[in-house]
Image 1 (cartoon, rainbow, N blue to C red):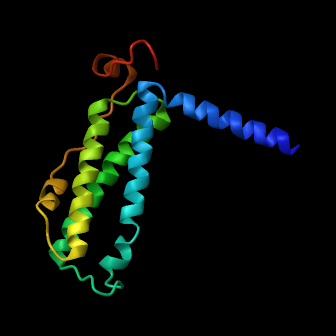
Image 2 (tube, one colour):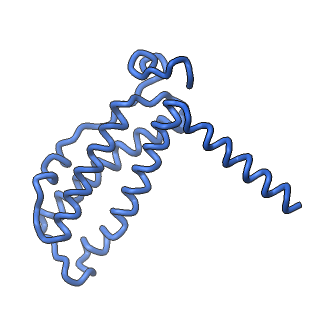
Length: 148
């Protein structure tokens, strides 16, 4: 019985690895990786915002900047994850926008917790929303060389 479970788990892992070989698989994996990194970075936000972390004190303005930067990333993640769940094709530009917003949020949040307000905070709060596309629109914008 244990061998069947191991074989099934190994087969599932192989299938997952093979999915990430397509352009869409790689874009989806990039979304999942960015989501994981975001959640890891943002996990102490509630405690820091509440003032429960010694040595880290944010002003009301800094808290507002952090919330806006975080919300920008969350909005894009949500749109892309909904697209993935619906089986829609992802556009490379949408994933790139997510990654750029995450980088700005990361720089902003790291600076705020270190006691400064980096310029990245302003750019993180003015970022656009993720662009998701349908299969027909994506065919024109994402080249998969006949692979999905």
